[in-house]
Length: 320
Image (tube, rainbow, N blue to C red):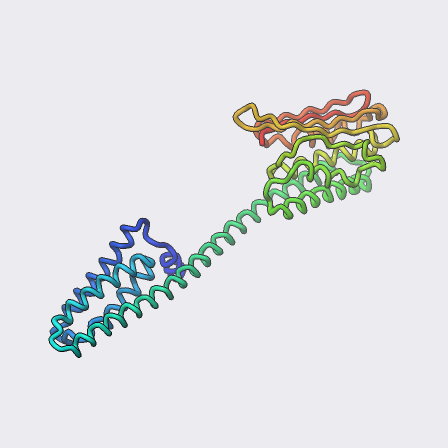
């Protein structure tokens, strides 16, 4: 019941006419009740009974409703006190009207402050509810990713120690992605920042051997985690078996944004050159499955991995 009243008080009727009509209806009701009580209590001091109507109008209709109710009741109260046969009665009537209007103004102001506070409270509650739902959704997604990583890493492995090291490295990459997303409040992050953070542990002494080339491009948060895992897998393989394991090999991560279609499309290419002949580490197993499936949930996703004489070449595209 309390929550209902809070929400109702914080919400104004739609449209100015509706608020004016509410104030007018409450004023007419208050005047009718006061006139019906006249035979019992007389016509003196009618304004005291009208404050409750203004309070209700301010609470449920807002400032415009309260002003309408105040104006109608002030005019009605003056009519009930007229005619002023003596100057003393005139002064008393004017003072009564002035006091009534001032009291209504104070009540309206206080209720407006209360309504604003309640509106903020309702907004905060709604934001908290949405945050809990979003957190629940993201935690479930993250746990699903971790479960998949564990299952794929330890499946059909004979070397538990090596598999555990691989799993720890993938979890670290996943944690780095989440750090970046948290810093951006789960809004889109730039691909350059994402790639720079993921590839930082793999950078050789010569920065020219690992090049990032592409325009400023925002990546949705739901794509960032999958892309981080793909780049981490490519960089790990390049460091252990590919272009970055020797002194001559180079890696170039390039991307381009195609805006010619109804939706923008991002095209990426990881290209290794000058490395040793490829080994089957990335040709089969977890790496291949990850690179081919991690981005499959995105609209228009395409992912192709090739093993050339110089090293791995991975091309991917999806709508952003």
